[in-house]
Length: 306
Image 1: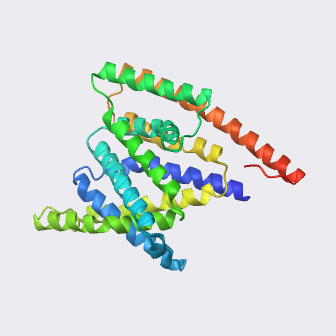
Image 2: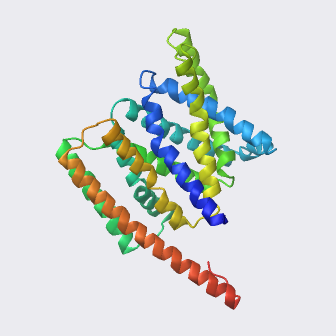
Image 3: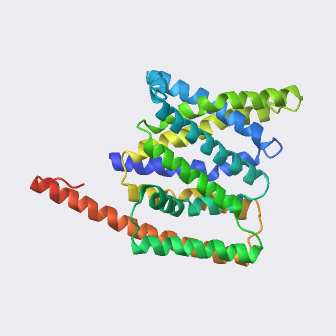
């Protein structure tokens, strides 16, 4: 099996775990989202620490937080990813998994827009067209439902901001996420302490709930490790295309398994977003192929492509 094939398999596995995780959190609908998030944070920390200990890279956690700039970026990343995790858990538990899927569908195009606003990255006409289609879709859904899809936009924005923070960090994803959940752990402990003090904690109440809450750690950590493995072996275009497996499975779970309402307005909005993603993905794929051809040509001639 080639490295590319391994990367392909790892990426599909990561996206399938992410996409089907709504089933897992639906099983914990009777547990408050804040309590689930606290357990997700702490058990993720345990899992990541074990992984880094086996790899003898525990020192890298402290190195990642060295300096006010790195610490500030990690604290910001921790804040926005905790927001994203909480919103997703709450969305699934409250019967809004369809809107959560919508958020992860529009996230790639929100990232493009953030790149333009923050890093002054130039947008091609195709990218502008795709962003325009998403804008029309969100506007149509707002008109049809009588309210803006705030949850979807908040999920997309929080994950987009998380991506911006990660882009400025000079450490790998496993080390950085370990540092992030380490920074979040005091808040998680506080939440669980207050919950336990009120006698309403789910942990220990039953074997099922206890096992599920512990399992939140590996379910969070495993796809991230798989994604990190895949990202080193696949082109960005390939990884980007495969990443749409995640919201597609979320959408399937919401509509087919959870039987959430899916109106004609949803159909029109989702069709527009799928068209936008198709246009954007084809453009990205072509750009990636052109860049690889340029790199091969430059390598053959001994020049450098930037």
